Structures are given as C-alpha cells and as structure tokens.
Length: 117
Image (cartoon, rainbow, N blue to C red; front, side, top):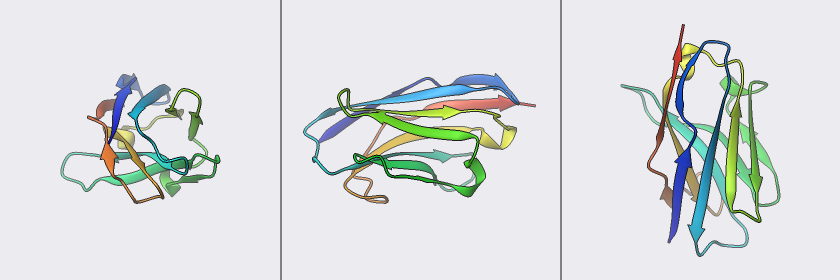
C-alpha cells in the first residue's frame, strides 16, 4: 500500500501560478506512474498529467504548455507546476499512484485549487 500526501493548493488570481506536491510513502513498485487528476463540482474526475519513473510524461490537452509535471525519485515526490491559471482550472486536485497510466491503485486526499477571475 502506498500513501500519498498532497500539498500546495490555494486561491490564486487568473494568470497566476501554483505548485502542487505529492509525497509518496510505503512500498512502491520500481516501475510506476504517478499523476495528477482533478475534479470540478458536478464533473467527473479527469486526467491532468502523468509521469513514469523513467520520466515519460503525458498531459491533458487543456493544460499543455501551462502545466509541468516532474518528479524526484529519490524523494518519491511528484510536482505539478501550474502557470497561467484560468478559472476553468478550479477543482480539487488528486495525486495518484499505479504501475501504468490509468492504473490508479492509490489516491491522495485531494487539495483545492481555486482560480478567481
């Protein structure tokens, strides 16, 4: 079992930036994928970005060029740098862990990101 703890959410004006972090603990597979998903009120949870332990990344079209996912394998931590934030980015952001993208075996508790116009 892997535990995930997110940090870094908050309130920001449109055009601003935030950086989320997610620290993983527990027994992790050597090959794994961590990612960020988000869920806005009344909407389904959607993929934001994922990154494999080898550094391969995938982004949702809506965040390409604005968000950057990265990870520090030595610290078992994944980051999401969010720039040029838009009100449409307002959601609860969840960290995930699994072997491959979509294999979300574990979730963090979520962190609220609110972008005001």
